[in-house]
Each structure stands twice: as C-alpha cells, then as structure tokens.
Image (cartoon, rainbow, N blue to C red; front, side, top):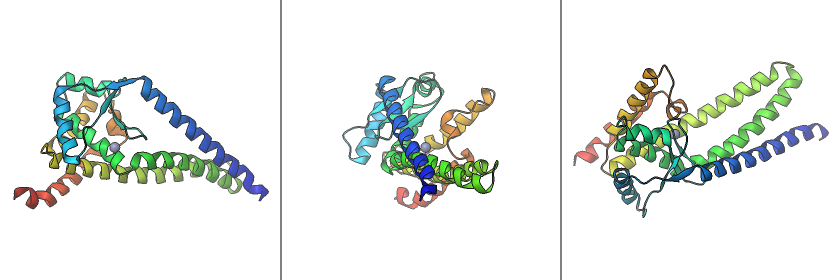
Amino acid sequence: MLKLIPILLAILYALAMYRFSAWRTGRELDTRSTELADARLKALTDRMAQALDLPRIRVNIYEIEPVNGLAAPDGRIFLTRGFYDRYRAGEVTAEELASVIAHELGHVALGHTRRRMIDFSGQNALRTALAMILSRFLPGIGIYIANALTTLLAARVSRKDEYEADAYAAALLTKAGIGTAHQKSLFAKLEDLAGSRGGVVPAWLMSHPATADRIRAIETLESRWQPVTAD
Ligand SMILES: [Zn+2]
C-alpha cells in the first residue's frame, strides 16, 4: 500500500494541474475573443443551424495569429484572427471557413472536447504513473518508454476523433446545401499555404491526420451518399 502512495500523489497532482490549465484556457478565451460578425459567414452558419434545428450558431474570433479553429470544452466554437484574416484577404472562401466551423461543431456534438480534456488529464496521470513504475525496472529509459506509450495512445484517440469530426462536417455541409467540395479545397489550400510560407504548417493542419487521407475519407462518404442526393 505504501508503495502506491507516490503513484496516487502523481495522479492527484496531474488532476490538479489539469483543472488549473482548463480554468486558464477558459479565461484566456474569454478575455481575448469577440463574437464573429460577418454577414456572408452568418448566412452560412444560419443554414447549418437550420439543418441542426438550432436557433443559431455562435462563432467567436480568438485574437491570435496562427491559422486555427477550435472547440472549447464548454462547447464554444472559435476561429483565430489569423484564419479570419486569410478569408478577408480572399485566400480562403466563406464556404471553406464554414467547413472549419462544421468540423469544430462535430467535435462538440460528438463529445470529443469533453473527452479530450479527460483524456488529457488521464494521459498526464498515466504518463507519470507509468514513468514511476517503469523507472524502477528500467532506470534511465523507463521514462522514455512511458512517454512513447502515452503519446502513441493519445495519437490513436485524436486521429479517430478527427475523422469523425470530418464525417460530421461532411454530413452537415451536405444537409445544409453547402456541399463537401469546400471542405476538400480548404485542405489543399492549407497545404499550399504551408508550402509557400517556407514549410510553416498551419496549426489546424498540424493537429490533424494527413490531408490526402482526409480527402479520401470524405470521398468515400460522398460515393456512399450519391444515390441519396441524386434522387
Ligand atoms: Zn479537429
């Protein structure tokens, strides 16, 4: 029993850190964001809201430069100022931005954002506990093995979430009459943007699976839905 105490302390510490970082993230988002007010985008989000039977979809602008979209654990949707600027500059279309909003809505609707925070605290606790245990048997390298195992597990979970969010977005965009073409064209555009900027990959792509795989997954859905939409 005494041997377990350090592990329990590690888990408690991880949980406390998680609560603190969730609180800090929420505060950061509150102080550095405003509601998006763009007529063309609103027309598109209203069509998606109608498809979902919601009064409206609120989207917030988060005042940071990296091109990214995110869903907060409380269900709020954010686009970064950097992403919105690309749209204002004509590099990204309103429909393409709508596809990002649809993807983030998918993370919220499918419960990923809440699970992800749990996963995150769970991951830290698991990493710490594994490192402590493995270090006893494999001094020096135990911690590396613990890190690798935890990272592998986390990557597995998030890849699955990304494909699910893409599929949700594809269905929503189809139902709202916006279509899936913009989803795919955005992926290609973001890759180009990465190439032209000396390999600086937009954050939204970095945290997601390979572009070609995502496009293929959407095309599989399209081919499955074809007979229905052709009627
Ligand atoms: Zn995602």
